[in-house]
Amino acid sequence: MRVCLISKQFDPTGGGSERYAYVLALALADRGHDVDVFALGDRSSLPESTRHERLSVTFLSDRRRPLVTFETLYHSLLARKTVDFGSYDVIHGTLMPASTIALTVAPPETPIVVTCHSISLREVQTHKLEVPTDVLRKFVFHPTNVLMDAVASVRTSKTIAISSVVQRDLDRYYPPDSSDTVRIPHGVDSDRFRPDHPPHPAPSHDRFTLLHVGRLVSRKHVELGIEALAATERDDVELLIAGTGHHRDRLERRARELGVDADTEFLGFVPEDRLPSLYATSDAFLFLPRFEGFGLTFLEAMASGTPVIGTETGGLPDLVTDGEDGLFVDDDPVDVGRAVDRLAGTPSLLDEMAGNARETAASRTWDTVAAETERVYEAALE
Image: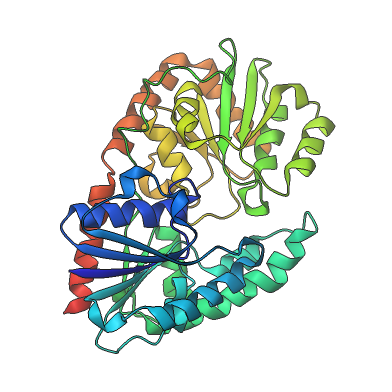
């Protein structure tokens, strides 16, 4: 097939949605499809591995990150002027709201597939007003995305939901028949993320290391991990927080208030080439968001042989079995602390879960995701 991927974000070093577009494009090309990507950014961000005879990447303009929602509208207009949609078998918007698909005028005979990473209504509902920039996100950016979600849901032939949580939200809030929504969880590169990496210097050798990886924003709920660290009954536990964001100062204050600042280290941005060893050297991964569409980081941790302690959100309930390759916890620091105590105090359980986590993640490859996506394209063409 000739596949047009409309992805505002196309960067292997970015968040889950950026990496999804990147690895999916390459996996589809590997499966013999001709894939043209239209994104915002610049070619300097693309590694050599992007070169593929069946993959073409066109950056329509530089990114305008400070106005992220209006950047989507801008991308829409550029794509509308630039892309000959009628020359493709299928058009795939890799990020709802629409990745410009909501506002592009595509010929009716060209099927449109959209991947929904989470509905924007959930972003509005779960975003807390904790720092000044949260006001703009909660009352301007996310509500605008809600409107674009509504348009996108009408224009699509098929919608890919990345988790059961997202699929339920789509069925509840948007008009497409549930038969037009297909759940396809993310994959992971288990050759890159594996347990046998050389040790990362950040985790202590003589302490039980908890790790969080992700943006320091409201819905990631990083403070729950800090509060759980204060609630644990052990004094040999440390928390490493990898990521950047407007909430760092607030989170550092919270650690000081609870008296765990000496046990909490903010690593800031960790380069992509150092992440695999950081995952592999840590003992357990914390996945505690208020809301998440999927959460690719927990799957990367599992592939690295690091069990997950997490709330039942995002893709965790789809892939993790409580007590076997991870532990489910309530949105409560005492309950999270108990789970930490259990793993830290039972090395045999930790080892068993580490092996199970690796086995679970290794079965979820990006080629599997591409094959499942391919079947969605075929169904859209019927």
